[in-house]
Image (tube, rainbow, N blue to C red; front, side, top):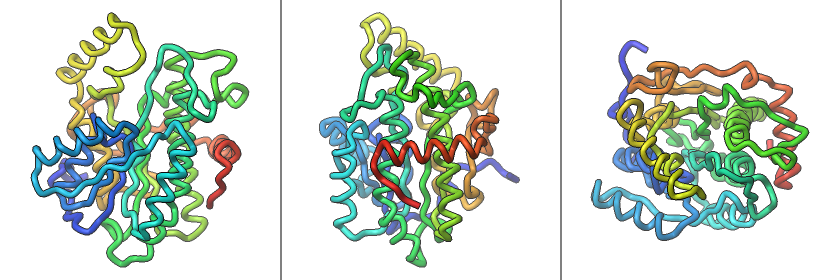
Length: 319
């Protein structure tokens, strides 16, 4: 890139509908705020009404006149996802950007979703897979409109992590039922996110749909993933301190949102692109560019197998 891409390079998004999971805090909030400032109508897809309403109030205080709404969605419940998608599709509106941002990170003990999936895999992977599948008609509606997304095409943006580089897909124990490692399960979920994003791209192109599938990662940013969870008071304190250190030494959550914004809006973003900060070890930096994909992230056989398993676990087949 000839010059450093900045959020100011985002064109007008007036008339565009954007849905962001986990938009009430951290990177999700700063992504939502920036896109709303560019004229987009942003849907805050959050599981907690109180926190979602507080985020909307914060946005109005930060940028009066922006357009956003709250929609309740619990990615750890397939019933909630189906209910959310049904309400969204009933509006018969196009969806120009779907940003799969929400995530669970390293709960100290193994927890399960409402459907019995390990919480990180069930939320980060299964939840977003089901949501994307069910919202495909709204994305296709945007695909048929001449003014759809920034470059005339709607996009699905999936948030992965540099943690994917140490991830492995354990098909013999996807749900970590036999052995649970907080970080191991997180790394697996972030690798799975990347594999699914690339597989989605292949299937979209095979179906001749004009929808883009793009991925991004924030580097290491001071987000609520470091500060919330079922931890002891001491560990919560240490994680909060770690978050402050990260904000000083590495990225703030607003800086961490830049790769997501690039993937969602830049005319230079490519199909199946993966973007992140260009600083040391991709952990920090205000310059955004192509991110490195670990070899296991480009394993098409694993991606195909994982996709089929996601279909089986959700009962949803698409593309």
